[in-house]
Every structure is written in structure tokens, then in C-alpha cells.
Length: 316
Image (cartoon, helix red, strand yellow):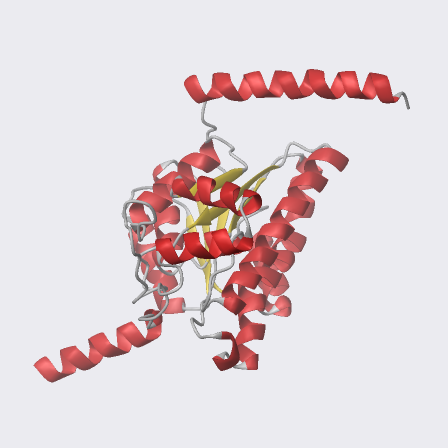
């Protein structure tokens, strides 16, 4: 191994890929066709998962919907079918349960075929301070938000590798690259999901030399109900994100085969600053952005739905 030759080759590749990225900023590469692709979305019964299903359905994909909430999943299935002649299959699956993931995965292979696009979207949030977070919820957060990705990828990646074709999508979070107070279990599990997806991306690309694509998504708080009650201090910098905007951005990133996507764009600057400034400067920035108080009024989806039902009952 010649270090001089290696260095010359490295700088040649680095310059070439830098110029390529500049060109693609001006002239985006052609978006890939997902018609006929078998797309499995976890957490498809509501929110972002449902909207992503609608986008894929509009582009002719064959949909496999997974959710622990069968009622919500069937509603997504119904809405997808309104798009026209769309093949859609709904399965009840607790992604935190390894045995159940493998069992339902076998069922999908038999009834639908080999999954070619896997969207790991299922997630939960506790929204409590560290010392007030029950142990079982810490475990649940990791099983749903991160460890389930191991099981789904173990189940469906072998067929992608054999065909040398596929796409893995990880829905992580800004909280998966920058720690946020009041989200210790959620943030750490999303860090784990990000790390797993990135590690697998490098393994598939650098070691196995496959054509399997990866997209790692890190959005700020989305108005799905999951973060009901969360606030933002300066919405022009860190807005609470609209569901449809996030879904469309993610879908376009998948079609363009982007590896990393942070939403909103200000997040790129925040992540860069994190690596450059002192911890005290980072705390000052966090206080300026309202990160210290963003979870103060958090109630979450379950409590929000309970409050709504109570309000409706009183009106009757």
C-alpha cells in the first residue's frame, strides 16, 4: 500500500465528488421510479407514516402497512385505496417484539413478495424528565425507536442484498443528533437509530459494494400529535413542522436518493455549531432557541386525545 498514491487518489476522488455535489445542487439528478416497488412502512397507522403511504401510493408503489394500532392501520389502508388501483396490504405488528416482526415478515414475503423499500418510521415518546421516566418506558423507547430497526433490517435486507437492489429509510430525529432535555429516553434511542442506519450505510456501500440506498431523516418536532403541547420560541428558526411538508420532503429525498436530510434547514447550522463552539456557548444557544422550555407544556398524543374525548363528552 503506497501512502502517496493513496493520498493522490483520495484527493482526486474528494475533488470529483465535491464538484459533482455542486453540479447536483444546480441540476438535480433524475428522481427514481418507485412504481412496482414493494414499500413497507412501520407506524403506518397515523401521522407521518400515513402520509408517506399516500405519497408512495400516488407513484404506483405496492404498499405494506405495519402498525400495532390495527384500527388506524386499516384507516390508512382505506385512504390509500382511494388513490385508485393501488395494491396495499395491512398487517398488525408490534415492531418492538422481535418474534412478531420475524413472523409477520415471513407472512409478507409469502403474501406480497420481497420488500424493496423499508421505511422504519414507528416511534414513541415519553416526554418526561430523566428521573421521572419509568424503567419500562425507557426500555420501550429503545425497542420501538431503535432496536426494532435491527429486526426489520435483519428480516428484509438479505433479499435486497441478493438482488443488489433496495432502499433503507430511517426516520430518526434532530433529537438523534442533538440531545434535548426532557427527552432523555427518546433522544438516546434516536441517537441509536441514527448510528445504526449510518453504520449500515457505510457497511453496505464501502464493504459489500451494493447498490442498496440509504436515507437517514432527522426532523424537528412534527405536528402529528406525538409532540402535542411542545412549543418553539422562534418559529422562523425552529418551527413546529407541518406533517405534509415533512412527508413531501422525505419522499422527495427518497426519490433523489439523498443519504442525510435534516428538517428544517436551520438544523444543519445548529449541528455544525455544536461541533465548533464551547459547551457554554451551546447552552446559551439552546436557551436562545427555547430548547430549555420546549417540553414544559408537553402532553403527548394519548393525553391530547383523552382531553378531546372529555371535551366532546361534556358538549353532548
